[in-house]
Amino acid sequence: MSHDNSNLCPECGNSNLILDESRAELICYDCGLVITQKIIDSGPEWRSFSAEDTNKKARVGAPSTLTLHDKGLSTIIGWKNIDAYGNKITPKKKAEVYRLRKWHLRSRTNKSIDRNLAYAMNELDRIASQLNLSRDIKESSAHIYRKMANKNLIRGRSIEGMLIASIYLSCRLNKIPKTLDDFIEFSSVEKKNIARCYRLIIRELKLNIHVSSPIRFIPRFCAELELSGKTQNRAAELLKLAKKYRLTAGKAPTGLAGAALYLAAIQEGERRTQKQISKTTGVTEATIRNRYKELVDNLSFDVNV
Image (cartoon, rainbow, N blue to C red; front, side):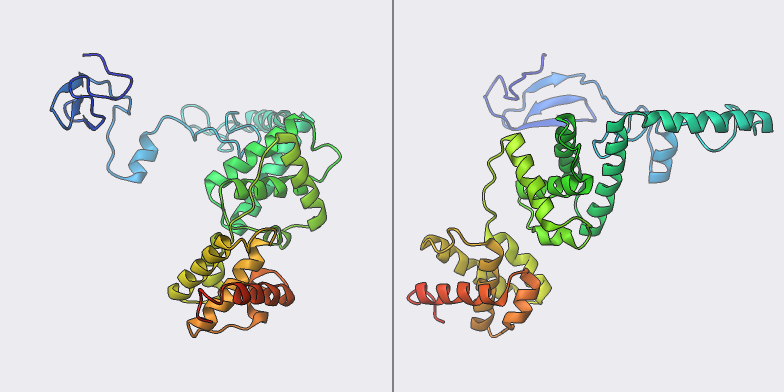
């Protein structure tokens, strides 16, 4: 039978389908109809029982990725100095291969955009490892940076500044609780320049970025302050109440998160000083106090302070 493209059973209309790999059949779980049979297996024809065995038998390279300047599709001349039969090459041939290898590496970055991307992707690896960013965030950041490079907007601006702005934007789009201050520690670029690059990217890519929710910062700050899960849940409840009474409009999310944690820690008997919370959240003690007073004054009927 032909496979239904809508992934629905033609007999009963359900989408609960099972792929039986041993029989190469697609079966409906509800009525038992065999929808497709003799399915072609697109996997390798060999079997392996260990990671080492898999690597030995694999005949393909790594997948293409945006985090390499050439997307991982270019070839390289190996450094083993052996021929196709596994024999060592002669000294004369070795000199020729060395020269070929050197010019091959030069030709890979003979364009200015390739040199730019090569440097930027190396920096991306460094920053991502220092901030423990996932592979998906790296890919997304590289995609944003490449868009700006193709628009010729990197010229005349700091490569590092544009790259950090791309990573920060990727974190915002993927709802990762990071602030610009988190990147300053690992960068030689001023915060003002990074913010300028960030605004440029948003304007050029016509993106509508929503303000980060302060609740997303709560687990991270709780872990750094060594607070319990009970305090974390209490802080989240306070922020939900604050949003309900429109106390969060126009306020920095990190300041709100810090104030909610300060109040929740007092209520749960895990008091932390304003200085400790200020150091963890990256906002001033005055901001923590102001947001704390607003929460206490406006939520006094809903929260037992």
